Image 1 (cartoon, rainbow, N blue to C red):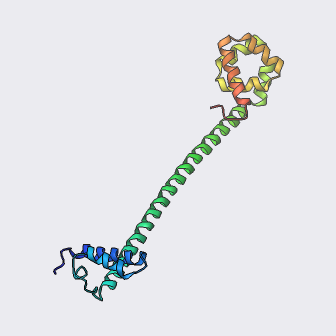
Image 2 (image 1 turned 60 degrees about the vertical axis):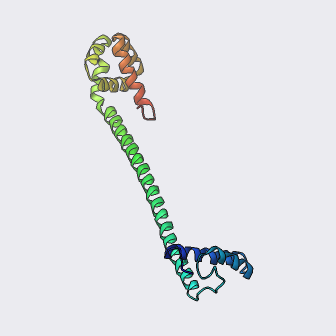
Image 3 (image 1 turned 120 degrees about the horizontal axis):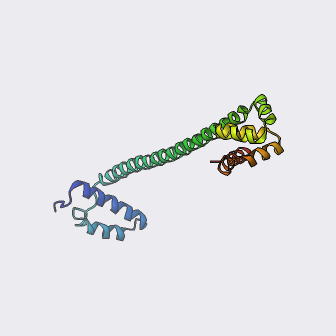
Length: 183
């Protein structure tokens, strides 16, 4: 009787038969049942050709290599995804660190602007004149000067300013005294 199954399907069928025989304890009656399913010399009760185990072994070894390669490919892809996630988190962390350093430098520059001699000049001015001059200055510089002045003198100067200007200066001074990033 001629084989009806093409060679790859017949190899798979032989492999399935071998696996079934191993799983069923290789009992002769079970092997006969499996042989009857196959369409070939095995179905007519003839013994399997001695080349069948080598085909099964070849098939299994071919599948093992492909499975191992696929497993390695999946693991490599997972590692690439994890590396991309780590790189993304590192980039975000670096961005935050850069923002913090920028903020810290701005704060240091802000406090350094109010030189002691400039502070002394404003401390000797009349409160209404100092309020008028500070209203015309950069908000950060005016706030720095007010922060370096005596608290009583600063409060009198702020009292002499327009409420909008005084509120803006107070906001900047409050944000400069906080320990955490105001943004």
